[in-house]
Structure formats: structure tokens, C-alpha cells
Image (cartoon, rainbow, N blue to C red; front, side, top):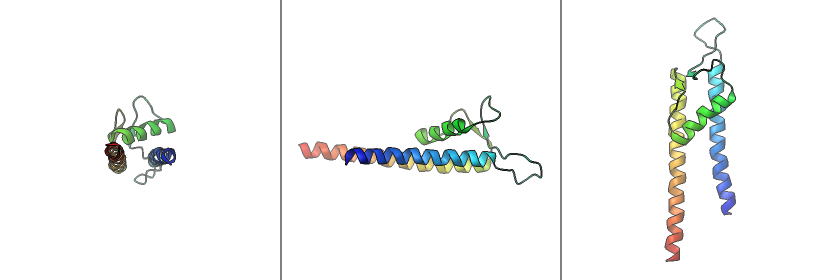
Length: 114
């Protein structure tokens, strides 16, 4: 049961990051509604990359998921900042909950042995 629980938690964390990866890519490459020109919305500034791929979005998503902050990729649009904010807050609470549950389990094991 313990191994299944750990695998479920890790899988759910990876699923959250993957969902946000796809959302970042979708938002980045969607058509910009403000112009009549066939232009992409963008919203992220990747260093030395003019056409990012899924690995770039995966990197951006996992950095936010692990640290609740962005790294070398700049957010340049309001919608991307809002999406990154939601992702960062969700990841913070997810990571904090997992940490608290882990500490609680360890404390319970230590207390039951004494």
C-alpha cells in the first residue's frame, strides 16, 4: 500500500506539470485576437529561442512546479502571468501538503515506536 501511495502522489504531481505544459503551449501558440494579422499570442520570452518546442514549455512548467517561481524565461503577457500565478499557487499548496503529510507520517512512526 505504501508503494502505491507514493506512486500515486508522484504521478499526480507529474500530471499537474504536464497539464500546465500543454496549457502554456496552447496559450503561447494561440492566435492573437487583438489583430487581424496571423500572429501568435506569445507571452513567454525564451532566451535565444524564437520558436520554442514542448521541451521548453515542459522546462518552464517543471521549474514553476518545483520552485513556485519562474527562472530564466520571462513572462511578457497578462494571461501568461495569470496562468503562472495559478500554477505557482497550486504547486505551492500541493508541495506543502505533501511535505506536511510526510512529516506527520514520520512523526507518527517515531511516536508509535516509543
